[in-house]
Image 1 (cartoon, rainbow, N blue to C red):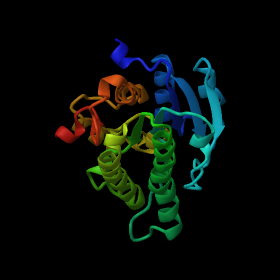
Image 2: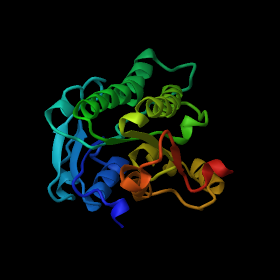
Image 3: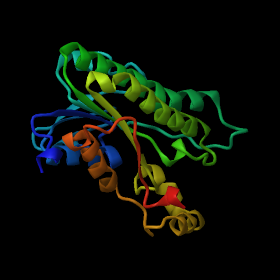
Image 4: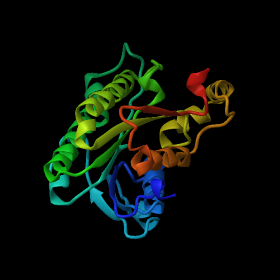
Length: 242
C-alpha cells in the first residue's frame, strides 16, 4: 500500500478546526503525513487528534494570509478547505456578503496555491494541491449566489493551474463534496422538508460524513494519484449521477 502512504510528506490543511477540514487533517496524519492544521479558530481539538500535528493561525478574510508560509518551511501537500457561506435571496444579497465569500472561497484559494507553487518550483520539487469544490461547482443552488460563483471558480481554477503546473511536478485536483453532515448544513438537516427532498435525491440514501471526503483527499495527495491532473472528483453519494 505504499502508493497510498504519505510518510515523509508535510501537509497543510486550511479550515482544519472542524468538519471536512478536520477529517482530512486526521486522515492525512493517519496515512503518515506530518500535518499543519491552519485556520482562524482554535485548532486545539484537531491537533490533539493527530500525533505530531501543529497549529497555524491563518485568517483567509485576508486572501494573502498564506503568502509567506511556504517560504518558511517545506510543505508537500496543500489542501484548500477553508470556506464560508452567506445565504439570502439574490434580490437582497449585499455587496459585503458577496465580497466576504469571494475573498475566502476563491481569491484566497488562488493566492495560497500561488505561494505554494512558487516554493515548490523554486526548490525543484513536487507537490500536490487538493482544492475543495462543491456540487455548486456544477449546479446553481438557491440563495447562495457568491458561494455558487466562488465554487464554479474553484473548479475552473483547478483545471487552469493543472494545465500550467502539471509539467512542473505539481498535481492540482479538487473534490466536490455532496451533502455532508457539517456545521454548514445544520439548517438544511433541521428543515424536515428540505432534508427529505435531499435524501430522496441521493442514490446512496444518506448524508455524507466528513470521513467520506477525507479518504478521497488522501488518494489525491498520495503517489497513487501521480497521473491525475485537473480532476474534479465528485464524492456525493451519486447526487450528480441523478
